[in-house]
Image (cartoon, rainbow, N blue to C red; front, top):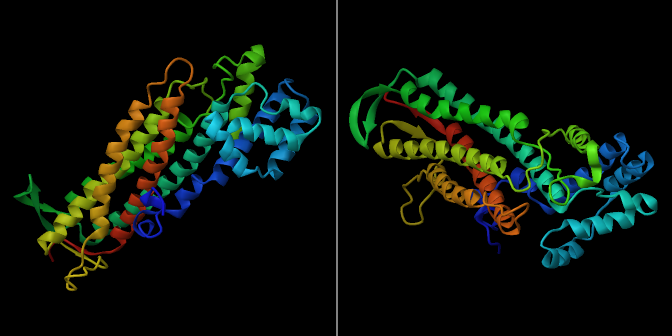
Length: 351
């Protein structure tokens, strides 16, 4: 039994997504945090902060290191973050004088936030592909049935005749906008986090900006000044997720209403009823509406997490950890279900 419907033993059959769940696994997080530590050592060696041999040893150790996760769990209970124990274990593996250069000039938030950015970048790339696939199928529907008639409805009442193309454009155009937004995030949002103890990179002196730029290049992230307590990029990504699920929710709601009319759409599949075997319930369409409302609700929490006191907040930061994976999981489920739903359309409009 789990707390989350997204990885529940059977609810995950409807709401789960293995590809996105993998990005929020402990192993993915650890891998990304170790990638940060290795890249940091290499960047600092380039600029003469630490010896090149130490950077080589740290990089080698990070590639082979598998931490004691039980010890990490116990440490988080005391420290509130995983990094102090992770770094302690890594230094033992690195050994010798090179151990003193592990994590040099960095703080826990640098590691955790950069790990989040690396994994969110992978999630955004996956979501952009899925959006593109959905749009492709909807455009095929337009080519096949676009000239057919539908009754346009305003405030759920019959208005004037429209075409299938008219309704399809209201589904397709927002999805194309969301795809463009996600693709632009590589440049505009997914940035390295590197500020040191209080955001000043005091240990690196006048080489701080150069080290951060090289670190960003090593990790294929954008180079922004530290954003420890400036969380607009994180909130922007959450907002993008809510926009995606909101547009898919509108699509799902329209499909469910068209199915109710009876003559405007023909769908394959559908869910069965325990009491009425003749029914084919539009399950995917209904769940798209639920996921849109779920993410809209969660987005408020991400905006609450914008309030980071002084140079670092433990409370707001923890709130992000609780919400962001759920929003990504909801978006993943919505994209998967929407992809299945568009693939099940057998007819649109009146023949």
